[in-house]
Image 1 (spheres, rainbow over the protein chains, first blue to last red):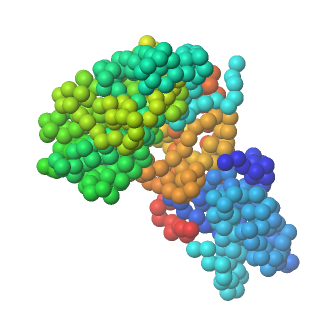
Image 2: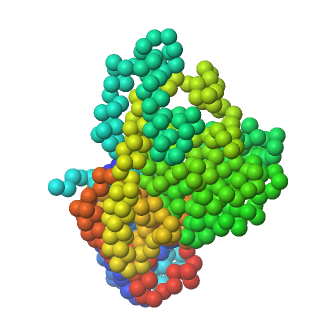
Image 3: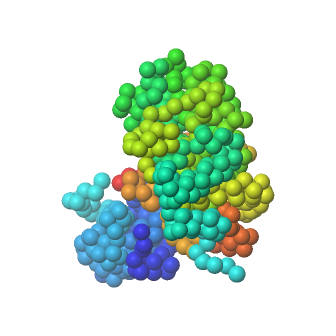
Length: 138
Length: 404
């Protein structure tokens, strides 16, 4: 199975690898997947307190090239969005952008879960209710 | 000069030796006869070529040429041996003993035998991949008709103590079959000395053509028979009908002859390169060899690089063709059942690469591989959350993972 050019580009030049201070009140962290499943993604967002805009996003991923590319792309998309806009990111947008084959769709699902988990972590820290995910990937 | 991509997946298949191709070519065009045509020279020429190849194949494994049944490959040979022996001897008993780390061609043939009424015991190996002889012995019942244990494992290269297992079978009057696909042509395999009754092997793992293999079927002490799984013109002593693949068989024979001449020197050369590769890669922190390193094929190394996922790693060394026990390469999303049988955590199974060296592997290719695997492991660890947690002293087993 050949990888799409976009997957290869994200794999070779991953955007926004790194770690944000997970203790900070304006940082949301999403750690999803499991080592025994072969994929773990950690996605973090840093939200500007004044504007509610995501000013930084970082990831680290243990997984195949498609998983790395999905999380790299997710951080790119998150930056500059408001939290409410970010919650709208759908895994199928990632599938389309990266031209993921059916066997790799779970990578995009994981990225979406990571986004939602990070946002919920942020919301809880801010004293808000977590958003209930109606897609229920689990 | 290095040529890319580098091929280090010789357990999957080997390139054909140029000498093999040369031997085969005339049998496609001028010498195209059917080896079963008994009444003209085209047939005689083909039959002679097959007889000669049968001698070459038999000689490599210490058999008589009459004991070689040509098939389409090791999968067919395994099917013929297991299902054929079950059908032939099911009046004596219905119990078969095998091992969880066998190739799917053996495991699935056993599953089919179970559907036909067999009872199968699947022995678990130790964490180094070897099975205990006492486990074999204690699995035997008065219904046991067949023990089938592979010679050298395709994923980890572990070589079982075949003579000892065969001796246990013989002592108990049970037939012994071995899938020797990865071993024949790589290490000395002798059906007489090893006490093997049935043995599967194939051309394309030993620098011969694809689509041709053999089943060794013992003719004396005891005389073994298997029920044919392919019915037709009664070729191959009635055990495998079908027009013989003359060019393939000629190539297979030539491949056996070359292996016989070069095996001893080749094993020394390949194991030296393999050991160097392994030693260098094990300087990477948190890397582990899978399988016993003493009882092992000379050309195989299976290494797990913890906190890095195998398919992601293969993408990082895209100029090098290797294989991984990672699930991401399969549709099932399950990692290698062989590595799991050794008791490896799924996580380590996901992190494994298999390096399979071969006749045409060079020192320069090994240098390049050492270099690039190291770089790729480091790069991927820099982006691995698990590596970061490990470095922060977090025990990954204490984390509640959100499994998906």
